Image (cartoon, rainbow, N blue to C red):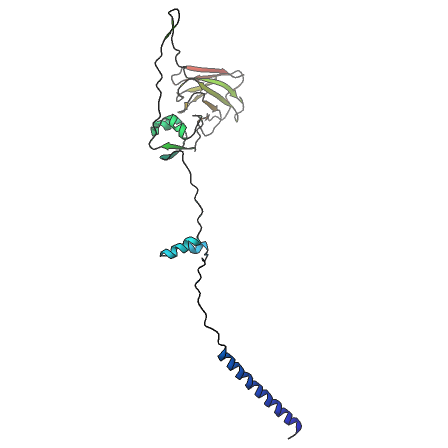
Length: 266
């Protein structure tokens, strides 16, 4: 055999032996180093879930506890009321404390105390009032009877009668300008005064008739010439042109047509 053929033969034989030896080593390695079976370990750590997956409530105490630990619910906003047993009422157009008091049979003083209202004329449309379902008793003090105190000469001085409730036209603001023109009216005297049916007149025959409105002591109201939504402190005549001018006389009449106040625009 030629030398080069013998060399090729030995190389081929060497490759074959090496391949067999490698396969045998791999087979022995696989048998002696087989991987261990996977061990299942139960995790006790809470599993957080997306909020969308927590809408369904699983049955069982354990499932409920897990769902509770995965879902965080924010504290709701709680609206507190001044007393426990109340209901809410939203002020409507034309409402006054006197009307609300009669409607729910609750004294005006009680409404003002519960809602912390210092000015009885400060109501506004949309305001929410608390109305006691079972109103608390409001102690009323009966004034002592008027007594005549004898003076050293035998004469007596009678007690003064309560001041009569009346209205005062304080000013006409913005005369001639429809957007700002209004009459500013205040009241004096004790108790409440209903303006229903009262009239405000100018010298040209224009008449404004007051709606149902009650003014309390030191209360005030504005009568605007233009249009708008009435409140307990702002009333609107609904005219398209101003009515007041310098030198014109403003007259206020009660429901019986008696003149109760006048004012001349400066």
